[in-house]
Length: 131
Length: 131
DNA sequence: CCATTGTTGCAAATAATTCTCAACTGCATT
DNA sequence: AATGCAGTTGAGAATTATTTGCAACAATGG
Ligand SMILES: [Mn+2]
Ligand SMILES: [Mn+2]
Ligand SMILES: [Zn+2]
Ligand SMILES: [Zn+2]
Image 1 (cartoon, helix red, strand yellow):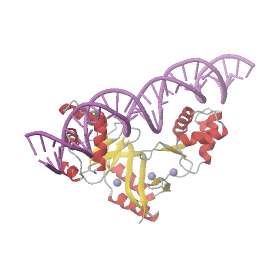
Image 2 (image 1 turned 180 degrees about the vertical axis):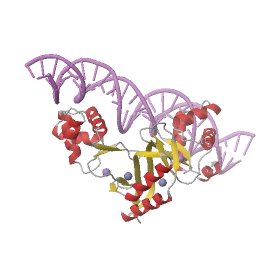
Image 3 (image 1 turned 90 degrees about the vertical axis):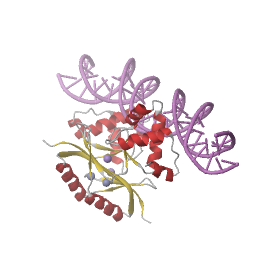
Image 4 (image 1 turned 60 degrees about the horizontal axis):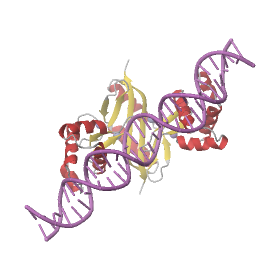
């Protein structure tokens, strides 16, 4: 991940290295504040502003994805795993990942019919546990 | 629409009647500011705060839908037409509506497999015109 | 090691939306 | 039609998430 950044011409600073590590270790979808908190454990002087700036840099470099779920601050995850979409449990807030080849294909077809190429998309299911 | 509101126990004030009219006449997906501007034409003293409050009321009453497209303020439309999703032209910002019965069905299946019932969802295609 | 240019921390700024509160008004009831 | 009262409004302050200006600092290339 660090190499991917270097190749993209991004300077590797102490705080960027730290945030990359925090993101790599995360198995959830933390928001900027959560990442700031986690980074603090290793270096209490990284600022929240730097967290935000670094997240933008990492996103532009294509190494992380940003998700803005309904009404909540943006959440992040590394983009090293294959593409997937999310189901949000409205009771607990839990974020569950899924992937549907069929839906992905249908989306492309629909866009094509309208004369478009999809650059990216957003599919979120807000749901509650079955009766 | 006004009757639907009355039935929901919502008081019909001058400003609510006006905003309902503005929304009914809109054939695009205006945001709170645009709605405020349009309402001003008929009544220059409706406040932006009331626009926001009314939008919340109308949304809770189920007569309008709120869409929070990427990085933009929320946009609204009446929910009198059948459900559909949106493709956003990244160049022009144009919002194009579409509906896929298949995707809707697949979403429900996926949720069911995970033990969930979908309450609502969000499907947005960010795209650019083909070559 | 030096210079250059990008990065950081801090605080202040922004943008969208919500809230507080006193004045007002819809509407059910006399 | 007049009354009462709970709900609504306008104005502006507050809030939340995020961005930015700036002076001090640090990564990289030579
Ligand atoms: Mn994910
Ligand atoms: Mn629409
Ligand atoms: Zn997808
Ligand atoms: Zn849909």
